[in-house]
Structures are given as C-alpha cells and as structure tokens.
Image (tube, rainbow, N blue to C red; front, side):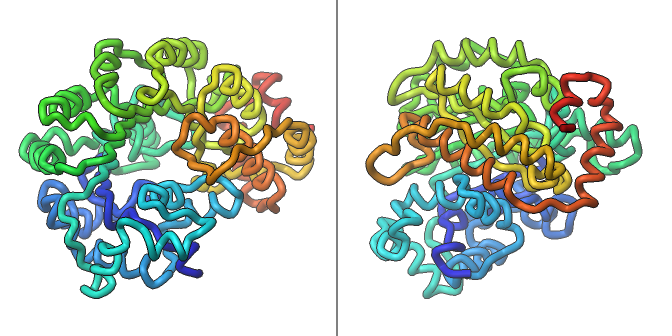
Length: 417
C-alpha cells in the first residue's frame, strides 16, 4: 500500500492502555498482546509510559508507518476507509494537519513533520517521551453484555463465557487496582505540559471510581485546556461529574447505542433508559465546549433500523461517529442474505442527503453533524453492496436462533423477506 493509505500519527503522539494494563499502539487494533509474553513486558506494571514510547514494539510500528507497510492489525481502519467511513487513522492524522485529500503536501508541511523525520533518521526512535494523547481503558467492568462485544470490554460477558466454558481468561481486568501503576501513568500524564487529548473507555467508565479521580487530578494540575472524551453505554448519569467536565475546554461524551427502538434492546439493552439519559446529557451541551456524540457499531444486527436512529440524531442536532463492525466476522453487514440486503438498499437509497458544506470535512467537528451522518449512510450502503460469505451467513442465523431473537415476530421480520 502507499504511504498515503498507511501513514498514521498514533505511534508518535498517543499511548493506548488496555483493561489489563498492556500497552498497545492503537485502540483501533485488536489487543494481540493480552495474556502473551509480550503483554507481560509491555505492561504498565513493568514499564513506564516513557519507556514504552521507545520500546522495540513502538520503534517497529513507526518504521512501518513511515515506509508505507500495511499491517493486519490496522485492518479496521483499512476496512472503514474502503466503505467511505471515517477511520481512526484519518481522524488522528488531522490532529497533525494531515488530510487524505492533500496528503503528500500536508505530510511534508505538518507542524509535526520534524518528529516523523527524527524517527526516520534514528531507526524508529522518538524524542516525544511524554505523548500528548491518551486512549485508556480503566477496566472491563460493565453492566451490559452487548452482542458484538467480548470479555476484554465486558466483565458480564466474561462471566457468562466462563460459565459456558467458552472462555478461560479472567472475568475482571483492571490495571488501575494497582496504585503504583496508576500513579505512574497519571503522574506522567499530568506532567505533560502540552497534553492535548484524553479519551477514556471501558468496560463502562462510570462504574470505575478512578474515572472521577482522573478528572480531579487533571483539574488539580490545571490541565483543562484539552480535548477530553469518554465513551459510555448511556445507562448511567452523574450530574456532579458533568459539572466538573464543564470546566474543560472541549468535552465529547460518546454514548454507545445502536437504535432508538426495540432492536437496540436485543443488541445492547435498556433503550428507553439510555435515550432518557441522552436527553439529560444534552442539557449540559454547550457550543464550543461540551458535546454529545452517538457512537454506533453498524452491523448485521443494527443496520435494519440504523437510519431511524440517525434521523433521531438529526432532529436533536447530535453528531454520530461509527466504527463499522469487523469482528466477529459473521456479524458484518455483508453477511446478511442477498434478499435482506436488497430490501435494506431499497430503504437506504431513499435517504435525503444534505448539501455538502464548504472546506475539508473534519470528523471531529460536531457542527458538521449532518454531513457526518450522510457519510455514515453512504458507508452502510457500500457495506450492503459487498458480497457475503454463505458460511458466515449460516453462522449469523444460527446465533440469532440460539439467542431466541426469532421468538419475537417484529425482530424476526428484519431478517427475512
């Protein structure tokens, strides 16, 4: 692949920490180190953030990006870009003023060009030992067991799979239990004078008391001039936390939901409660400071009513950011039967697109929410047009039967023509 299709700033500017404390180059990659020997070495319990920055793993990751070497670990971004959806790679590059449209010019003239050149000249080393961006899981504790999720992100799923004897790993993963490791990471973060981005995930972050502690530590360090975000499943609401978050320059509250009706109950659960909490979050929305973003994972399960959710978002003037599902593979949109996909294409082709706004589209600009939603619809259409795999289609329907979804006539009607 070309440099334009592969280059990504994440190995230089961001540190990612998984629920079990393993470091990882990027949150869009699967956690291939968890439970492995590398996971023991590249872990917050055994390595500082600065040491991770110049580890052999990260040096290799940077050299691959500079030399345009595609990695299977980056397949999520490649797949999203193939459907026209916004990828983490493209969003992160924009932080360094590198757009896909003018890539080679922007890459050469980026304000961060010198740090990429330093790594190129020094076998992947970086002189950025205090990354300006953090993407961290505070643990896998979660009160939901979403159908497309896994034990890494849900203790509830882990417990169920242990009971079924389909998983032998830990039920609960939480590196923040170790006070020494926690302080090491947060002290480094709070000593980063040019800190710009902090995004927290789970599990469900609002279940973890360390989340409130992190916000307090950032406030004490006077690090409020940052882009702060977190992703929640929307089942919880903490007004005192929202009062604190309002003190930061820019806050993005990402709420995971797959629909505005009954189908979301089957995929995630508690739709009515979540929509009610979204309304509470919207009361704290402030132009230029606090935003709410709907986070979806378009899949063979959710695509049937996703457009209704997007219309709901347009009515509320709420932005959408999705990660089209890639794993488990049988849940990909393309693996729905041809007849079902055609029915959906007939529906999605009736979507009324808005007039494009001037300038380069920024997926992180919430004021361009209408444009973003249009792009999500286009990505769904492309996914519906892709050929499926009959074996995976059979696996999809086998699981739907096992989950007893077809006992509900309304849900069954989505999957049959």
